[in-house]
Length: 278
Picture 1 (cartoon, one colour):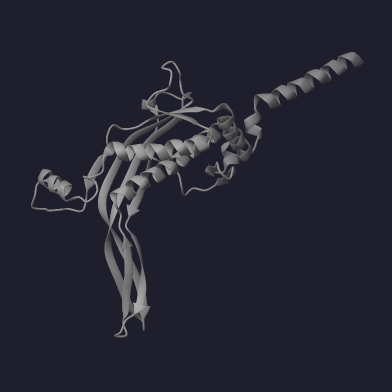
Picture 2 (cartoon, rainbow, N blue to C red):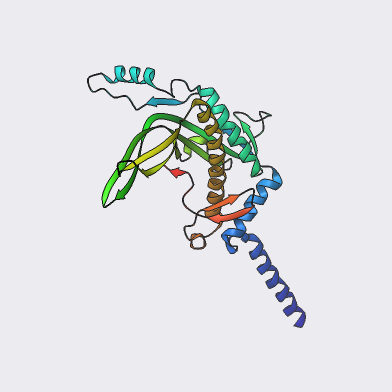
């Protein structure tokens, strides 16, 4: 009898061990699972295949004439544009991809654009840029101050370029590209204005300011910066999708996780991320 009891105890202990091993993620905290995900990317140099659009959609929203047809209005708006008619699609995407690829490498990814080095190779992840759009417009700048309860308001239209991107980002283990959700992100590039109110000679407030104008070269530089930002979004999106599959919703508590590859720090926040389109 004692021998049989010992055998039963060993079997029970083994069963508990197998149960723990079979469900490791469910018992761990979101932070622990997130650490495992980041370490796996770095250790195994996970590949990610990036596809870019063939062209940019570009519009000038600053010109409107109700007496013209839409075709005539679009044609004149294009010729009167300051930025979009001069932006070369391939150059803008080139600078964007430089920032995007460099930042992805910081997370431990091995990025490739449009194709893998060997046709038979299948990447671990996909980042499909479905569409990119540039809209030239004015940004209404406004500043207000009060003197003797009297409001003084300064207004000026600044040149701006609204940059929008649509992404599909997913692991190769998921279904094909056509079945993936589309995610959106947007940034506004604007003239840089520095100014403020000061007392004038006549006892009234005067607004003094200096504008550092948006230029074509700045737009290309900003494109690289946006690439770095959206690479951060890309990693965080993959990380949070993984957490949703591996960690119970009750433990996630609706939090969105981010990872800083330079500080090697995990933190939560909802402000900076892709927007899911329904």
